[in-house]
Length: 142
Image 1 (cartoon, rainbow, N blue to C red):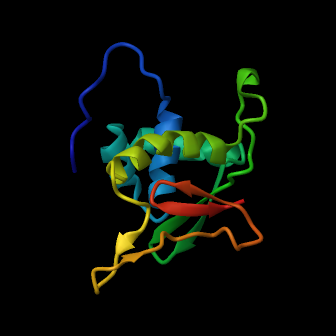
Image 2: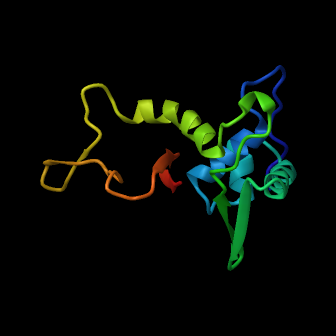
C-alpha cells in the first residue's frame, strides 16, 4: 500500500472533486486506488469525494462483483451560482478539449487507418436521435 501522495502548495484551477469526476469519466470501472494515484490524493480522500458526489446527485454506482461501476449524471447542474446552467457534461467536455487537441496532430483527419491502410471515417453519432458528448475516451449520451 502506497504512502500519502506528495503535497502541493498554493492554489490550483481545478478542485479535487473535478479531478475525481474527470478520472471516473475516463474509466467508469476504475478503482478508488487508481483514482487516488491519478489525482495524487489519498484513497480516503477519494472515498469522501465520491460520497459527496453521490449525495449531491452527480454520481451513482452499482456493484459488479467486487468492483463498482460508476455512472455520471451528466445533466446535473453545477453547484456554484456563477456556473448557472453549466452541466456536468459541459464541464467534462471543456476539460476534455485539451486532451482532444493532443490526440489529433496537425495535418491528420479525425479518422484512422484501417488494416488495409485506407483511412476510415471517425466514429460519428450524428445519425443518432440522442446527442453524445465525448468525455475522456468515452461518449456520454445526453
